[in-house]
Length: 189
Image (cartoon, rainbow, N blue to C red; front, side, top):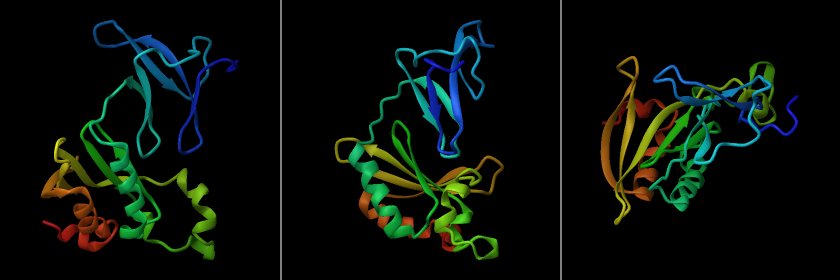
């Protein structure tokens, strides 16, 4: 089993299969992502759907989403992160109108226990790292490409976004990305 069935491998190396099931709400049909290949596994992603993966590797099948974020904006943020934040474990999530920067506290460490170099263990670590949102760059005006930046506030159980300022993406990224994974992040207001 599994041959000719659609598979998706997430960032942690887990293989997922798609199957169709009854929705608990209204009796409709939903597409389920499962690590088990069952006889009813689908051969392809249904039309109008796409695979989505969270920064922590959770896989789902959803209706295709159009994003107002330009690919070059995501690419630029991806290039700036290593230069500005100096963090090894950072991911960008693209939403319809937002770029969310996720990182992990593990990014602060230079080596693993027993002196194992971090560089040699990235693949191993990737399976266990938990990413948390740090910054949200939200597109305010698609014509002028102005963004607002907010930081995650961990004062509540679910967390909420605290607005910081608006401007162009490059200026905001240069000002705020250096705070990822540092104590100075919590002083931003």
